[in-house]
Length: 488
Image (cartoon, rainbow, N blue to C red; front, top):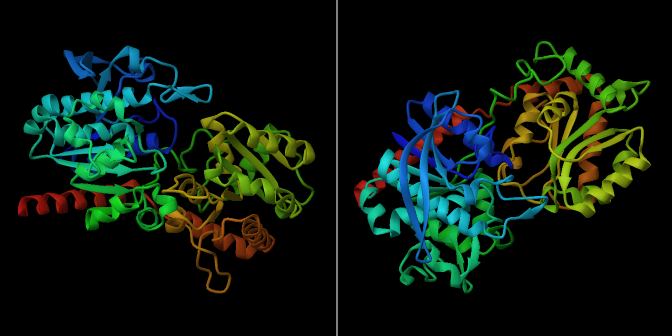
């Protein structure tokens, strides 16, 4: 099965968040399952400078607002053998950031990614001829629209499946109706059934309507966005209308990168059978961050966080709960940046708790690995979480997750029961500081019973959320959709 994966990010070169991790890992897992995937992405400098590039097609153009936007299609191969098709347009993609810089989005992002999606559809039609075009998030939605609504591309890709995976429904690619002509479509497509959304244009809505199938990144999140208007962000009815052609497939964890037994970014490797080195990783992190070693270090757990500093990630209720959590005699290390007001709150908290708290802003991949390896517990109090990957990494590293029961967090973490010895973490349901505090109290209380804690850590290590499982589910879904199309 030839699968063209269209996405704005691909790890490790062009990364803003979890989408890059998915696009870096999913094609490799599909290859292991016998499929023939490739990735279509913008030709960011980070990609063209890191990989050996060839020119596959020259002098191509997308007409937007009666203006031709020229581009080239470049080719490369990742070290794992996955072919890359890169859309080269220096004016749109030769920039420092993927979506913006210095905390501000580029004002022409709608134009940039409408162009990208349409150019990606041309690349698929001319060079790949896939059986499945798999678009990810709103940045790639225009590829689905072009596939089904632009006559020349539709003719070439008529037999191919068009599928869309939604990673975060909060971002939909909405822009003003007067910019509709940049899609290159007849105005008849600007309708309530497809692209019109409260007087504006909604790329994700249009792609959902026209795709053969739509997925999101966990079964629970799929249910939430179709039945909870707050989490559906205005598209809950559109998603319900897809019926059984809207599903949730849980993302996988990239165990090639995130495995403490092979991780070269941590002080010493460890495994379920060699757990002592996890304590060594904790001691090294304390030294590096100039955190004191408690006299009874076994009784003072390290709680780690690697996150964006936004209300979606639950840091607002953490700010309210922080003093009571620190009163439980814990250490907290945060690798987080984002909202300036929230950063200020936690910087001030570090001054209040100089011996027990550290905040590092910006993103440092090596430090993220070291925090994961050192932590006894890993905190994700998200308001909503489509899938979440870091809780899967935490489980692999023997760091018990403390999470809100939402989206993929609920699908991967279960409350530890000391009596039955089942479960791999701690959950809370209500989005409130009190509920978060209670979950941390349960975790800290169990930590101070070493024998029970080691059972929990063993359960964490046994949790398996590999990409091979997810790739198999995608291929089964594609086959089902193909069968349904053939039957029509």
